[in-house]
Structure formats: C-alpha cells, structure tokens
Length: 198
Image (cartoon, rainbow, N blue to C red; front, side, top):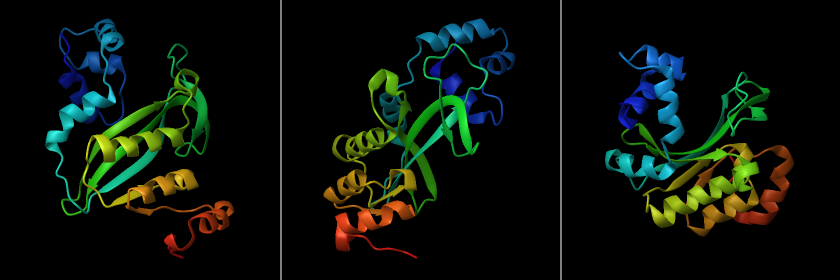
C-alpha cells in the first residue's frame, strides 16, 4: 500500500528521475502498475498541501510571497490530459509539458521557503491564464490563509497592471523586473507608487 507521505518523500528526495517506474524500483514489492493505480485515484490538491504544510511554516511580518511558473517536460507523454505545448524558460523554447504556477512563502530571517499553493496551467479545462492563477493565489494567501508577508516577488511575465494594482490594494510592496515595452504604460498607470531600480 502506497501512502501520500511515501510518494511525496520520493519526489522530494529524487534529484533526477521522477518516474513511477523509478519509484517502484526503489520500494520492495511495489510495481509501477500499483503506483499508476494509486496516482490515478490520489488527489494531491493545493488545499491538501496547505493543510499538511502550514504547521511547518515559520511566518514573519517580513515574509515574501514569490510567484513563478515552470514547465515539467513531458516530451514523450501522449496520454496525460494536462500536457500541452508551451514556452519553457528553462528550455528557452516551446516544449510539450505540464505548466505549474507556484506560490512560495519565503522567510528572509530564517533563510527558508515553503510551497503554500500551486495551480496546474490547463486553460482548456478551467479557462484561466497564468496571470489569473497568480491573482487567485494572492487573494487566497491574503484573505483566506491570512499569510503574514510584506512583499510580493514576481517575474516580468507577471508584472502586469492588474497584478500590481491587486498587490497595491492590499498595501504590500512588490519587486519585479519590468519589460521595456511595458515600462511606460506601468509608470503612467501606477504613477508615483512605482520606484524604478535602474
């Protein structure tokens, strides 16, 4: 019998190979078919991650919320519903993979971080963009989870007027690189609230 804890520990400890075959090879009496059946029925939802992880987080009034996305390369997968062609910064091009948008809590005093939320990027299923996922996770962290933080850290992809205004509406700071083609518009829309670091 596989438990969530065993599977999560495997994902955390494996550095290069995350396949179910590799997992089965390292557990005596376990086959990849059993792992596959488990994963089909297991739901490792964002809510579950928060419920099990929040007791481990060391919160700070100076905490940071970091939003980023990544693409899990699934170039050889043909039957996974969430797989789609999308741009990967790591691969510096379009690849076949699963897009994941993550919300990470950073405690600068402790020099530690924890994943507090995530979303699978699958617009065919939910109709949401990555920007809408970030806005939803930020709203959730602030209003529902009551996470203590002072600053939001985002990449240039998320430096949009709608996200920056949302951050300002909850009176938090933000740091982000701004693409040159957005700079003039952002300064015009946000005015004196933007401090440019050149």
